[in-house]
Length: 430
Ligand SMILES: [Zn+2]
Image (cartoon, rainbow, N blue to C red; front, side, top):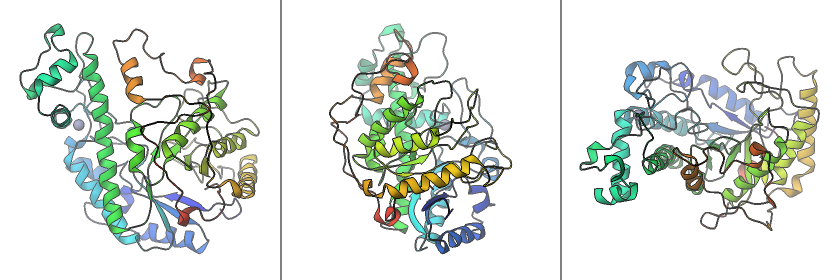
């Protein structure tokens, strides 16, 4: 890591089963050793709460915390992010392990930033179970001021005999025989984003109480096809905005998507931000996962810097021997350091160190594009005159919007700066 110029490492993102082998039984021995090693080598820790992957013991004790799809099928555990966002049992367990971590490591010298959860909504943005239905009704009652007629008029429920006379009649937009009510779907999407946001803020607050002054982030997915969350509502809740960006392998001009997504993240951050994840080479979860061309990794990393990123990080440090992402590239590949990827990583570390003077700089945009998730949902949710076409980014449609240089928002533009404890050294690959 020192050779590659690494200054910070995200650690513990999916470690719940190792940190808490049984309910309220904790084993921090591995984490102690890792954080001590990082500190001894001058590397900071972006310490993650492991709540994106509850252990098997949790689901055996709380099977009702498993999510239900719109057809009424309850998922099984055995992967990641397979929990109901509205589950009280999940919330209790998540806040408990976050609190244990925070109390144990609040004063550890390696701790520079909290990495809350991981990629909220990547797999479980929507849950249609009865618990989520009740939470949806609570959200609606708050939104419409407990006025059911206001909801009926807003949704246009006179059409197709959908008028509601009791809040209990309202369900998640589960599978029905014909087209759903589009405003019902739109409010559902808003609720789902807010429900996950409430989990983030709850964890963040636990961490803040135990470790005041340590900034908290969670990695967004402003990417070519991710649309589950309204990040304009999320960004003001983060101490520093970070993003994950992966290329779509079938896109011949993927560099456009890198630039556009960098701009929208910069706008949400209101200043410098962090690239939390991208890849050194091939990924593992698309139909075709191609290796990056020579120089492509460096070009993309520097593009993120040019669009405001003050830190460049990767998933992952070392290629895994097993598990669902064993074929995902890494900074240190399966074959070791005698490979081009490693040499490119080391070169990039030197490149970023040479660019230290741009840290904290901002970009004055000449042109703006309004980007709004509510508008995108409203345009694309069925029934729609042209689903999945109205708001795709340039790299998806093959068209280039003129002057696509910035994505500022007039309503959300908080001023943020990078935490000095985390980024006092030059921006570097981690
Ligand atoms: Zn649910």
